[in-house]
Amino acid sequence: MSYLAIEGLIGSGKTTLARRMASQLQWRLLEEPVAGNALLEDFYVAPERLAFALQIKMLHCRYAQQQVAAHSTEPCVLDRSMVGDRCFCALHSRYRNILPREQEVYEECYDVMTAVRPPFLMVYLEVDPEVALSRIHQRGRPMEQQMTLRYLQDLDAEYEQTMQQIAAGTHAWSRGIELWRVPWNYQHTDPSQNAAYQDLVERARRYVGHP
Image 1 (spheres, rainbow, N blue to C red):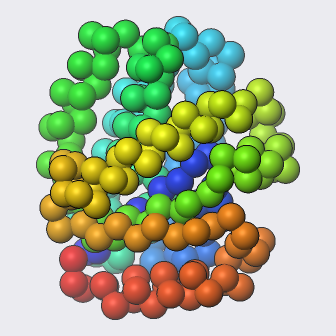
Image 2 (cartoon, rainbow, N blue to C red; image 1 turned 180 degrees about the vertical axis):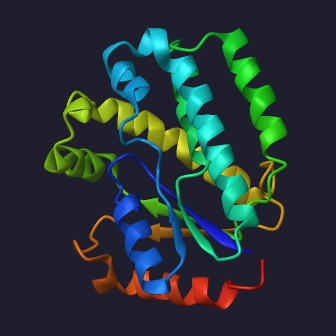
Image 3 (tube, helix red, strand yellow; image 1 turned 90 degrees about the horizontal axis):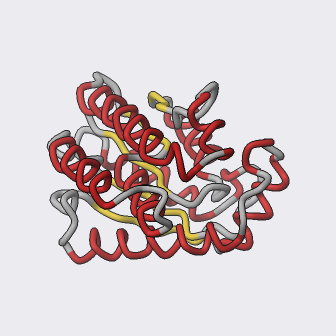
């Protein structure tokens, strides 16, 4: 069955959007595996020590979710995919929280796992890092409150490079995948009030049964 993936910065609003879409479309929702993730909480305390372990764990979780989505008997909405996780890994490699040899191991795993059926549509929420940081502060998750604007700007750069690769057909998942970039700086608390949201819902409906 078909599934779509929603990507974006931390604080972009992708989880809110994923929940709303899944509810309106009556599709299965596969949420980001962060709730109760003790390793993620520890990572924010010591990223230089735990970045690689966290990225491998998250890659495995994403892969498992996408296997479920690819073989589900009902369409699914995925809250971030392996594509997004790889942006985080690349960023921590640049920060030297992940060693070059560790990055090689990650890439080897990633290359194998991209054999899983890709989403029919990847939605990328375009949000300015400043807006994302404001939303992070508003939602008030304790482990995120030390996040800096520089971190979000660098993550945004990694995402931008990846989205360009997908659009150009040079990414491993460029095959058969449509990328839709949606401006999302000014969405209402209720995404259904956004015209772009209505377009997205209608597009998703048209794709059901046509992966």
